[in-house]
Amino acid sequence: MTKVAPSLLSADFSKLGSEVERIEKAGADWAHLDVMDGMFVPNITIGPLVIGAIRGMTDLPFDVHLMIEDPVRYADAFAKAGADMLTIHAEASGDTLAALDRIHDLGLKAGITLNPPIPVSALDRYLDKVDLVLIMTVQAGFGGQSFQESGLGKISYVRDYAEAHNPGLEISVDGGINRETGKRCVDAGATVLAAGSSLFKIRDMGSEIALWKGFGRDAGM
Ligand code: DX5
Ligand code: ZN
Image (tube, rainbow, N blue to C red):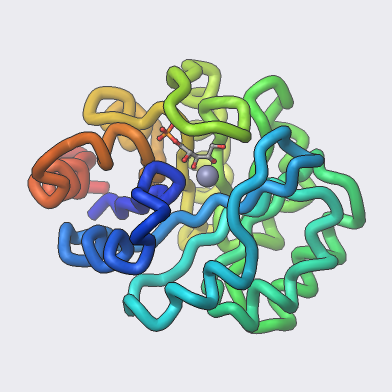
């Protein structure tokens, strides 16, 4: 089954605790948490303090997407706050391999991602060292942007690698995901759909998530 990771960037931040409970009740598999530092991306969102504050509200795995420079600096803090997975950008400053190692040493799953203009081959050196690859289909920084088609080829590229070398690799996709783009991503090989605005604006989030989870079933994936 396809996993669905609602992005809390589109939640009502004045009641984040109950929003996390809401996505869990709606059938989410993971909670996708977008951390932005105002440097790697222009926007600033949440940090370990907020993630720690909502950790007790749900049993959902916390899929933390770090849009920050030199992410190794904060790996320990996010682990302590209750992150289960930490995904870092290959193009962020700092030693990417050392950051992935540190994330694993902390007992967390490690993910790698990159922005749409960067060729997927920039991930080659990390693919045997991660549990998750996150394909960005919008430029990181803001919710509500349109899906960029270039992500589909990147998903297929990572899927081919996973089939040959790492069948457990999760391939997640983030940005402009809705019912239509999500299905196309799953058909290309995505195993996780991260989505903010499209899920949060739907009144019956549970039915929508159930529909998305069924994507790919016919293909026997
Ligand atoms: C963007 C974030 C996304 C964002 C996606 O930088 O990484 O997770 O919440 O939002 P939508 O689904 O609205 O494109
Ligand atoms: Zn994200």
